[in-house]
Length: 485
Image (cartoon, rainbow, N blue to C red; front, side):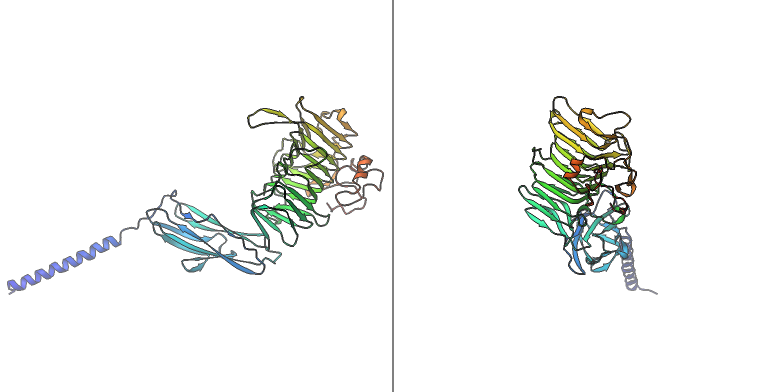
């Protein structure tokens, strides 16, 4: 028989056991409670940068390391399903996250108001001819309902990086390509000279501003080339990859010889006010091609050009607006733009503009002279005029082949020896070969005096050894290699 004292001991033990079990159950309840995470897609991660640049110029096979931070600015945890390189295991980049070297890390929890350091390393061989100019990837952050990324950019070749710089007087040499990121400016009163064979690449949306003077000293077999930063074959004829060259008001005495400008929005925008007998810009043996807007956009400026090819432009090969003074000799304007419908002529002249207050301002067209030129394309007419009678409009065409359309648009008082609406029979516009075929109506139709003034063509072939010079930038040479262009 259990006495009262023993009974009280048993009861006390039961209370202790019950309390212990309750504590265990309470602990279990709290331990099973679901963690609270931010799950609204609008609640974004914050990064110390949106793009990680490896802008060290690589001189040997090597690597570089950069870092950025990821921050959770919210009052609750964020669960990141994965942090990974978009290029995966084949990427030139490597990540180090929380001390772990990897290309991917899953189920990362970032505490409220906390940050995470991510180190990025890249290894490139800048001496490899197979290495692309720019090595790109991105770090992708995936959550349940949203995705964010940080871009990675390194220079795969040994380049000279120009990043948003103002340039004083200097000379660029061809030993390394130049890469312009976030545009560049040739300062007022300064002259940038670019030697033959120099390649200048531009990142997306970058422009080349010239407030001073630009001199390009290319040669036939070693031109100066301005182009985008995607030199792969698939991008060779893609327009709009960069902004273009802008000769700003006040720039003067720029000269481009044996120069190629391609794949931009506007090849050359020329805004300097015209100065009679002192051209803002002289172009000789220049190719401008694959522009999403215009090859040349001139606004009241002064341009002298010869042996030039301007082709494949989304709107104008040459828009000579707001008056000015222009002279084109032996230039081929050949616009076979096919990306979408073009509703503008290849060449357009006007003598006015509308100012910021929407007032019409007339500016005289002192001269626009075209001699021994071809103005042709796949949209008639390929020449357009928009003049105000209150301003001067002095223009002339001598010994030119022009697509004017089904009606005679050219005033005979402004023309001499014009061939209208005859196909010039280029060898292969679709292959960018604008030399003349053997049956071209442009052969021997040029003005002899103009031919004598410019005795060699864009390929350095003689114009003065036969009956008369041919029209356009190229002289027809029998038995010449038809693939050269």
